[in-house]
Length: 208
Ligand code: SF4
Image 1 (cartoon, rainbow, N blue to C red):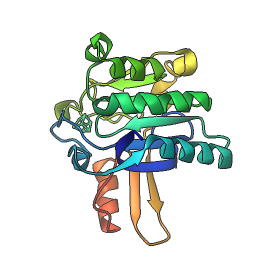
Image 2: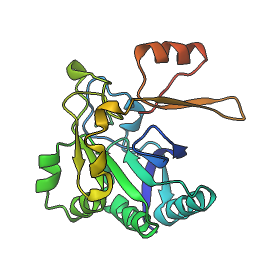
Image 3: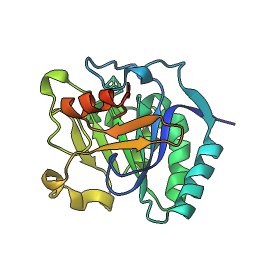
C-alpha cells in the first residue's frame, strides 16, 4: 500500500489557507532555504510513513465530524518531492468535494514545465498553489499564509479566484493548540514577538 512520509497533521486549522482546513506537513525538503521555519522537515528519512488510504479515511472522518471543513492543505517539507503519492491522495480529497491548497518551494514556472507525471497530476488537482522558496532577505508577513515577498498565489481553478482582490485584507494569524497532555503546538505565521511569547510558555518549535 503506498504511503506518504509525514511530519505532522493538524486536522482542523484556520491559519493554513482559506476557511477550516485539514493540514498535512510532509516530511523531506531538498530546497533548504536559509531561515526556513521548519528545518526539522528537511530530512527525507525523518517523520513517519502513513498509508494513503489511512490518511484519506481520517480526512473523511474529520469531514463527517466537521462538515464546515472546506479543504486540505499540503505543506512541508516539499510536497512535490512526494508528488506521486500526494496526487493519489489529492484525487481522494477531490472525491470528498474538498478544495486543495498546495505550498511549494519550487517556482511555478519550474512546476508547470515539469514532465514528471506525478508533478502534473498534483498541479492539476491543486486549486490554489503558493509557490517559491522562502527568501530571508525578502521576509514579509503582510500577506496571508506566506513568509516572503517573492512567494506568489496561483489561482489554478475558480475555487478561490474571488480571494484575489481580498488578499490584502486577510490577516496572517498564529494558531496555538494546548493539548490534554500539556504539550503546546503552534502553526501559522509567527512574528518574533509571538515566538518570544511561545518560548516563555515552554514551546520550542513552530510549524508554518
Ligand atoms: S521550501 Fe519550505 S520547507 Fe523547504 S526549506 Fe524552503 S521554506 Fe523550508
